[in-house]
Length: 111
Image (cartoon, rainbow, N blue to C red; front, side, top):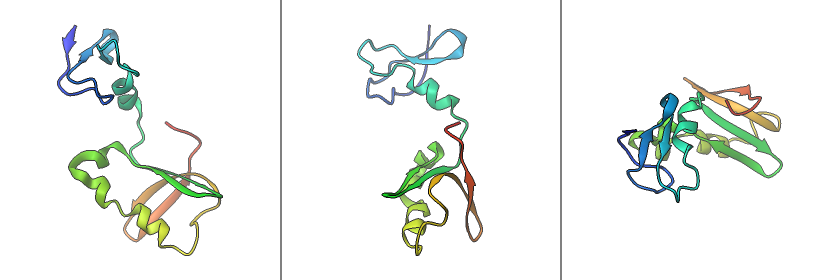
């Protein structure tokens, strides 16, 4: 069992190890989701996912925005909120940043 540098995102501390097959796992018996790091690493989505519905919108930011606090200055929320209405029909979209705004691609689910 090889230790993995870093902390379990579930709050368990320095409990990560490299399990069989190269899967990063938490060794804490109290961990509510020991495979969370492995699940996060398996998610290939690197753009924003946005759900538009009757209640408004919800954004799932990409993990790389956690680095250097980029999430705190992400313009997507204010760009959507500042528009005259939803930029697209209700549904789930992948938002890709381009020079003059966002390109909206229909998302069929979490990748």
